[in-house]
Amino acid sequence: MKKYVIALVVAFCTLNLTYAQHFNEYFVDKTLRINYLHIGNKNVEKLQFHHFTQVNHWNGTRSQLVEPYHYGDLLVEVIDNASRKLIFSRSYSCLFTEYRTTERGETEIAQMEECVNIPMPKKPVRVRFISFDRYRTATMLKDTVLDPEKLPMEKARKEYAVMNLHKGNSPKKAIDILFIPDGYAKSDAKTLRYDMKRFAKYVMNCTPYKENRRHVNIRAIKGFSEQSGITQPQNNLFVKTLLNCTYNALDLDRYLMCPGVWNLHEVADDAPYDAIIIICNSEKYGGGGIYNFYCTVYNHGQYPDYVVVHEMGHLIGGLADEYYTSEVSVQDFYPEGVEPTEPNLTTLVDFGSKWADKVESGTPIPTPPVSKGHPDYDRIGVYEGGGYVAKGVYRPTLHCTMNSISYNDFCPVCRETLEKVIRYYSR
Ligand SMILES: [Zn+2]
Image (cartoon, rainbow, N blue to C red):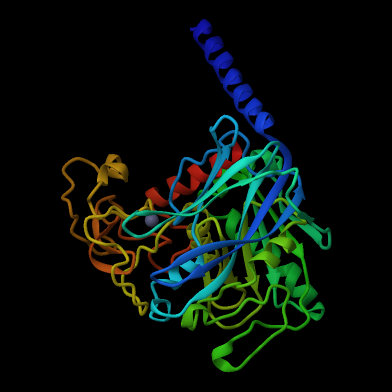
């Protein structure tokens, strides 16, 4: 038995060593940020590089440089140009993909700021950007060689003080959550400090963050805005803020987004980050969250604890909304015959790749819903309705933080997904 344990320990060390060598073989401890424009509409799509930023330190994972999850609509791949080995990849989604599904996106061309952080390569690399539609058809948007020796790069500036709100392991061994306040003027300094601490508590009192305290860091940038409040173009209210966040994104009243993505990351550079949460000083209900992109939340109202962890579910876990009553027009969002990428929805096309192993034998599929108080209310099953669609799309449980206003109530599937991602950053 003892021998077996020793053998396991040796294997584990060797594995770590191999990964560490892998990082040092291809990368230096810096970040290369590729800032680009995503241009097009429903029918055309183009990606145009704009500028490159160099940041001292790489704070992302070093052990799993090729990301195992493909929850996003976009994928960036970095390939060593000499050996043709895939040495880094990252999946993410963006506002542009959502824009393409809107009425305006059918004809009008939009250009949106986006960026991606990759570890700084030592030698020339081939960088590929691939986009996927709802049918998972891949389109190569860019395939080009970047030579770090010849690339003009702007250096990240240090500008803001950083508040430490929850301290777990070092940034290399934890998910680094970063709060950035928007719309807090200098006169709101007290509210800013109070809000950052308050939101950190909402996150850390929620499962599975609570159980993974050591694997989570939360910091906040202490950045003030020229004016107090958040822009609401539909109400003719325009506010000069640090990040210029705005309601009415994609013409949806409550959709609160940050169009200046390059500036957002420049502000974020003062602290290590894997996930950016923008906390907006506004009384108007709103928020939004996009997988591996950023999320926003307003600071007032009745359910800020629920809103922040719900939006972080989109941002960190790539989780879908499990509700299916919505004013948003999302026809063909989950086309028939295609399994959704989101881990908490299924069309039963490939249910084996989802939570089939969690469904007790004898559970009817689809599972008939029961009311609260019924002995089967907590049962994991296959309940019809989810992802804004009432028919043909299924969710794992009858109640979940991704379904309705209910704080600290992620269903076992969402919980496990979030935990997996937290651990991914902690290896
Ligand atoms: Zn769920």
